[in-house]
Image (cartoon, protein in one colour):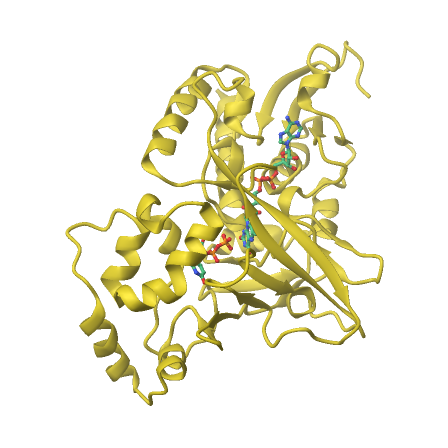
Length: 372
Ligand code: FAD
Ligand code: UDP
């Protein structure tokens, strides 16, 4: 480790996507000496994957599917991994049937035993859509496009289960992640780049961190090194409210419990993910072999059970939480020597590619700052 005479240039708290991108850029491009720290016993944050006892590659913290419209992000990560093209598909279990999600032409036809064309289904949605004065909440987004009945079948109960809140209590951005289609496109995402790191996320992170200037310290809370390991600057990607000792109160996060199982069968379900909006305490079941393309005689699946307490997985997008975050954000701006980034550090419901883009932007700011 470092001596007091030679402090690290940067300590990075959190070795998820945010931490790995910044460590890579600072070490490789600027020649900085970097220490990355995580309280967990592995790198990768929530995107960590590993091979389980049966030899199947699984995502410890639930399904992570990479998709982006940013060529910059895709090409940047491509320096550290080969890609395996993968287009994600989800089915929803509704009224005893497994139907495509996002809702599309097939979903409507299968659910109602109809043979509508794209044009017909457009009218089907339009006839049911309810006018809303403004689209503020997740309920508004859905009901204003497809009406109350489909909203109740696909969105209301899933959202209550996932967030512990009614869609009318959540910002529109939550449900707006899911489109509605009048064609038969079964893909969950339509981004220009959709692929999985061929040898897994952890392998990609290892490549990002594989540099003589980067040291890794795991199973260590950053508070443990304060005053012990000298450094000049900190980048923090943990929960922002925790950094400030909850001065303005706790920011709410939604947590999950993951129940992993390996089964003595080649495949368990007919799609990579099956959502269960209305039944069971879990929201969805993921079967990893579809995501990773691995061939194996057995199969591994994970159930996601939403919880109020536990590791902070999801910032909860609603006005009062954003207002509370803004108080912390103001404090962060006044805090010299620390940059806040990532899903937890900036309290944003960000996908992996957005976190990478945010970290690359922060890196550009650091370059600018250091050149002044
Ligand atoms: P994280 O990965 O959360 O890393 C933060 C790290 O900081 C953690 O490892 C934590 O242990 C560490 N830390 C916190 N506090 C401290 C401390 N005091 N001291 C030391 N270390 C600390 N995105 C997609 O694009 N596609 C998907 O399919 C997708 N699926 C998801 C499914 C689930 C169930 C979840 C929860 C998220 C999903 N995401 C997905 C989002 C994705 O996980 C995040 O965008 C991304 O991992 C965030 O990276 P990060 O570096 O900001 O944070
Ligand atoms: N959603 C829903 N029913 C579904 C799928 C999604 O109601 O079958 C809503 C729900 O509120 C969910 C949000 O849309 O939290 C975003 O879904 P996404 O699959 O993007 O969630 P994530 O993968 O981030 O958990």
